[in-house]
Image (cartoon, rainbow, N blue to C red; front, side, top):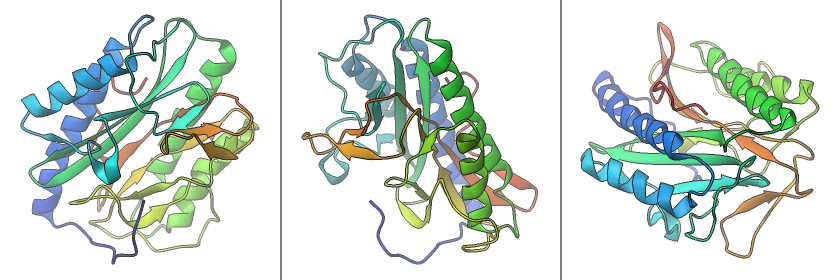
Length: 259
């Protein structure tokens, strides 16, 4: 989904707007997360997200993007990303559901995601969610001035692969700002000390997609939904993060929004 564009470093004024857009995206994710329970449809969650975003004066970034038909992505169990909300997709006890939210406010985009348990889930799936969340945190910790992009990517990969999980290659994180997808691409795998150097003003969306089995994925006939090739469960967490002189600043972190 990315196109070859120059990397844009955000000004302090840009960053102020991105904080507000990021906070809104995080609030929406928290609101949707509280609504996740057995018996709820993914379309119900989509309606809730759109209503919340518009009430705050924002626009659902995903809706209409490259023809995408909803305000959030809702990906259940073996679905990795880009699951399309549907009134017939009812959450069941023991499922996990990845919710991805994009909100545009004041001309800037906030992008965040978390995978939520539906009721009680298996210990195996709990470990997958915890590991993916930890992989994101390690990646964020490496998002510091002077580091290289490969330091971020390898930090994410190391956590996931230490548990024997597969790190998705076909979909990656991205730069973000006035557009949802900007340069650079941010893979969830890589080599330390390689790639661009991180400078103050760079804003990126880190989003590890970690599969319980193989890293290989395929796309369903709906043209959007990506699933694991072996049918095993996947988890997805994401934050929009700014590189500042004081360290990484998580623009989308809101209490209750992380599964």
